[in-house]
Image (cartoon, rainbow, N blue to C red):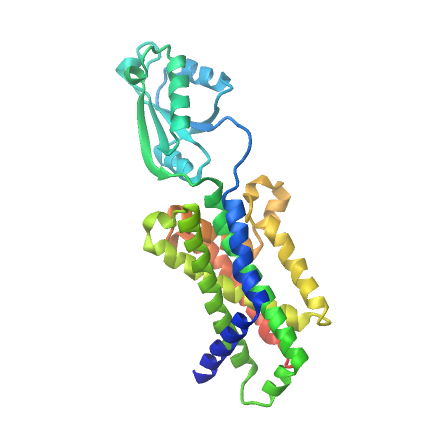
Length: 354
């Protein structure tokens, strides 16, 4: 236990002494988060609006809405699907036509419109369009409007969890690579070889120390997102925070193991950073950090789903936006565990003191 405690103290001191480490681990992710978290999409695109049709007398109404250039109609099969789409942001609102809806007498069975908190413009747009479609002179007589207890967080809600996952990867891989390169140049590893410390103790001790820094980094980034950018984490659920920290823990161990493996497998000290860039750079753009992987071509999507950063970013994002607990993110956790086992095994098998 004393050995591991000594590692934590030594690595932490080394981390805070190096201005470069603080810059890339904290300052750079925070600046990136502030830039992308405030990013606004310029231009207008018609909002997606769901249609939940329970009536057999609504064909003409739906056709008129579909022919409109004001909104994009998305057909919904159930209320659960509609609310799920609202939470994910794939629709801005949905119209529900009751089973007794009749186009000829719409006042007897009002269609309802449900939108999210803060989407007043979208709600008003759909209200006016539906009233126009029904030839209504007064909206309240023909349409029932509801506001769901859902706050859509826009692009910042997508990109901030992705940037947290990116920071975990960058800190995990590059910090350990540069540390080991420094150890090798200064002969620290050779001196450690003469001590009672075993390779497994060195690896585990280093992982514990670095993971502590990565978890602290995650907490700082999310607090910045909450108080500076107005991010809502987990809809107030403490289990969401626990799950995010769990992904930070597993992701930290995973990427630290990858960093150690790269340091061991690189043919020279100069090639290690280049090899790390070769691994991390594609993941930045194929793992859903800055945009959904659904935007990618289908064959690239298969590659994306095989990358570890994809599942860590997805797990953190789902916990941040929807308050998902550990059970809800078991697929992402399972995939992360598989990658962690592979990376740790390679790391342990290839470790050498020189």
